[in-house]
Amino acid sequence: AELTGIDFKNSEDLIAATSDCGAYMTLSSAIKGLAVKMTKVCNDIRLLASGPRCGLKEINLPQLQPGSSIMPGKVNPVAAEVANQASFLAIGLDTTVMLAASAGQLELNVMEPVITFALYTQMKVMTNACDTLRTKLVEGVTANTERCKDYVMNSIGIVTLLKPHFGYQKCAAIAKEGYTTGKSLHQIVVDEQHLMTQSEWDATFNTQNLIHPKFVK
Image 1 (cartoon, rainbow, N blue to C red):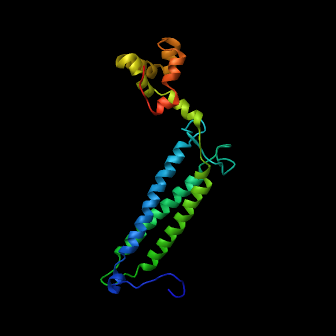
Image 2: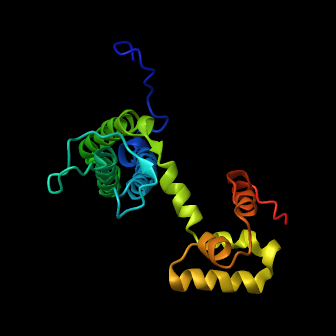
Image 3: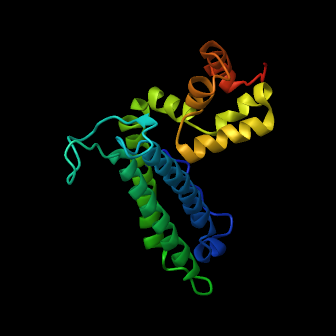
């Protein structure tokens, strides 16, 4: 403590501390929990950014490489992939800590060297992964607004907003026609069946009404 300035203290029970590595397991488990959450976030990012034309492409990621090694011009989500792999390593190292902690015999656990190695590696890898994901990806993400708008307006589900106008049965028939023919609801309701004018459609499906529907005729 004098040399480092860190407030190191002896365990209150030195015998227990010699055989029980529960504190190390708690720390490792917390890091694993972070890795699991980061894996979920990165998987979502990769899915939402998939494309450019055959995937979801709801968000745009910073371009960190000139192209895919296989497909020219394709920009891979490399920062998310790096964070994924770092998370997998941290999760695997938690298993190392768990097994080493369980390998003690009677009043002694001689596996603390590998526990220490695993813990420091976990912390270093996850720290780097978090920093990389933040600086190389999260801070540069933008929404692909036109793509998202197209998804909404080509959805069959927005027929719900037409129920106050036409009732459940008619809306069900409109939805079925859209589903079976591939036509948009706008095409069916406004262009073909002339059930609404363009201005009435715009008033019903404006952005604010989609976010906070009022269902007003």
